[in-house]
Length: 158
Ligand code: COA
Image 1: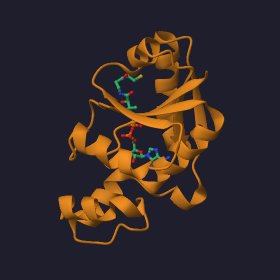
Image 2: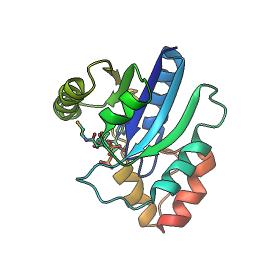
Image 3: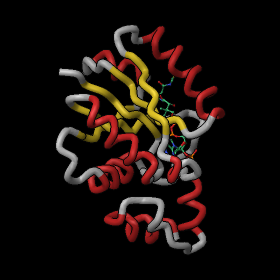
């Protein structure tokens, strides 16, 4: 059984993330969407809120589950027998940053491969901070996040 992890801050989850998660679910037997801490970021949504939004956003995708972890991604990967770390790449600047993390994770967890999936062009400009900014000013985020979590995000960020 090939298990993969899609890690991220997901503050909040966007259509860009969902695209990558769905495509990872086609490639692997089981995919865990993992809410992890990026020490360089201060998140607006709590880990519990982010997990709950992801649970709703992935409703209906059979082989995908949600978890959270507050340590090193490499440790989670080893503890849970993951074969791959899946990341989405939107641009060459994403790649620079992701490449560094992939090399570090390869050294820390040599049995897991980092797999890059190129973002759908439609989602190239979508990011969690964009969603937070639009919703924070009372704007409509329905084009950028799954329909069943739009109201919850808008209400929370307004
Ligand atoms: N489509 C659209 N947007 C996407 C996207 C996609 N496919 N993939 C990522 N993004 C966006 C996110 O929305 C986020 O936007 P923001 O900066 O506006 O908030 C941005 O890209 C970065 O994504 P994020 O989820 O914050 O993850 P990250 O790339 O910063 O991931 C962690 C870093 C959390 C995975 C990493 O810090 C980690 O592994 N932490 C655990 C501790 C650890 O092991 N550290 C050592 C790592 S070697």
